[in-house]
Image (cartoon, rainbow over all chains, first blue to last red; front, side):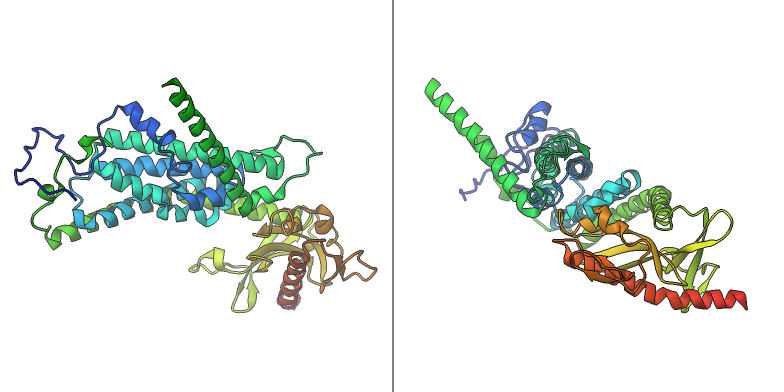
Length: 229
Length: 223
């Protein structure tokens, strides 16, 4: 820790008072794009691994979990940001968890009423999303320190990043593990499904290969910029 | 990281005195009340759709295991006896029920019941259709299971396994290889012996439990 200067910094006038550890200013597009690419929750931050591993056995499950998480991220981000000045520092984690749990419960009930078969397939993993580190992480690290518009943009970006990662993994697993996509036969009757892919080890293998692919792309890009320099 | 990240001394901005306890309590109480109100509201809105889906699932299963009955009656198990009238105070979903199916001319086809017991992994829930007089099976349907994909889940997907139960007489006995002449024998699935045996066990236990209840119901009606 650096020594604290004795002179108090002059607070800038207006609502944009500096909050410790607040994210640097960025455009709305940058706030959205961050979660999809550079800070992708699954492939870069390794957050939300429990639902990622558990529900990516079919594409429908992956999409449902992704969209539900996006809904929770946007909703909890908005509420946390709107009430950030009223939530006392001492009870902030309790309050964030309460807000997140509310939105997860709403998402769970809405899913059960609209897509009961998917809701049944997701089983306990939808309610378990309350403990998804991504949700509390974004509330504490971002939404609590910025205005509602930025908080919603960040929640949307992170939710899209989460959904796209889950779609990538679940599409691969369902295609190889069942020869189908969204229950529609793709590879034909002569394809013998790799059952292994829809079981838990298949999830780890698919994620591992996806990370390898990502590392390969990043490394190649780095070398190109070095050569150009 | 850029220098802008750390140019405010955090210690100077933290509130010097802590928030009073009543404010913390008020914050959490208000947040809890709002959360509760939202959850209850959405629960009430979605409940009809959830109930409708559950009823549709039961109807489809009854139709399947009793081979398309023209109509059926629901009997409730209250105090170890069957009754036509549902107890009004309890939640109907928790009360054991049987569905008595009839054909178009009013002849009883059989009864359908649900039963659940552990399979290879977790509970396997079946709906079983059978004739309570003879113990002859009409059919069964797997309502819920968490058996291994590709192996144990064949109890649901393998039509050769599911189809052979029709006309067999409980108590059943699972055999590996080809099922023989006795009407109690059914062939287990290769690679899913434990799941197959779970299905057989659930059917045997359920038929043994419900036959005396249904016989008592029949006696009570003929007297």
